[in-house]
Image (cartoon, rainbow over all chains, first blue to last red; front, side, top):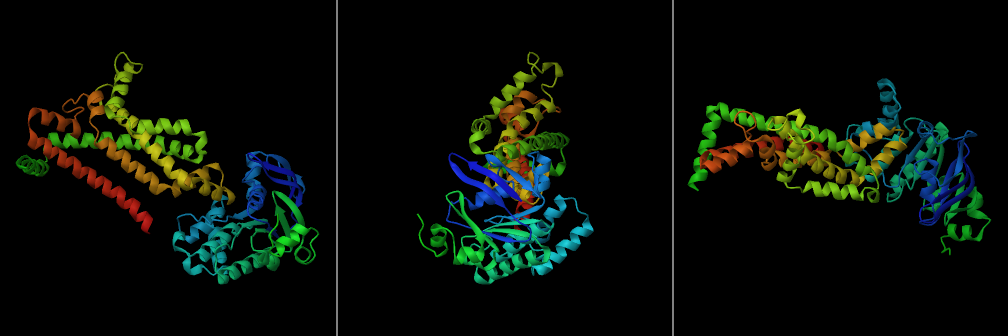
Length: 239
Length: 232
């Protein structure tokens, strides 16, 4: 996916991206202070929020803004929100939701959901109501739900916020496995720079609605181009 | 106290005797109120969902109108329907005045704003988040809207229970547009008014007890559905 000259304004400009290209099979970490525009960027990538102006390209093709095309493109992506919302239904039906939305047959749904729940270690909870799960279990279900239909791009907004170290490790492993085995491109928004360093191939640093720097995780964390990036990744106050 | 006791005895004797007039009144009450609540639900739930999913600042005027109509005195609602259905009114040609249909229309007019308003509030609580989640998972507009309704089903059921409570207990509007005609448009509430005016307090109390019992049974069923869904 490629975004060009994207800009989003509410009562003021909250995001401006001159150019951003996401290449297949990589894990991107978006870091930056609160209110920098990280979640807005993720929502724009997912087409949930329309930019005030700018153009999208997917596999090199420009995306028109017809609702049919937007839905088709949205169906190639999975998004896990910062505040996980699972439907008040069983774990199984939550994971099956995206497949049902795509009109998959019952056998395919059963096969895929069963396999996924097995992979994320939640087979025993398939019949449990989703609103009775713990935070870590709920987040694993949310990720399983978003990858059940094999998206090309998985977008994660603070997927491990408020989770204990055990669940953080489980989810990071899940993300790495999905990326490795299914070649899913992953974009993860995180406040945790250590997490970005652990799992991302490329890191995007955003501040005040603009991409300050983008590069390999190695470069961003050891030899950033900009002073602001260096201060942020070292955990210092940036002005 | 004695009147109340006599009323209770009268109520049970009427029920046990399966008094045909009473049965007719009870069935007409249920037919009118249940039909009205079904029609209201079909109108109000989509409207409340639509309004609940819109940003509040865009629906302010609608909100105020709906909340005003929610508190409208039934007799005023009845008067409006009366004027619309009377021979001189725009729908007088339909000849619906003093018929069960007119009573259903009046009750729909009263219940729709209540169910719409409460549905809207229920949807607004987390409707946008549900809609966004559904859309992010690939749902089209209809499936996303259906998912929002499904997620707000307990709030919507609560709205329907409240609307039903309003119409089953309502007397002013059905009296005006129905006319309280024996065997044709007499329902429990209008019969209670009539019997009280005639001084038949035992029968009036008896009818009141039956009305309360029916309301209790129907609300219990709806409440159990709501509660059952939440606790599963």
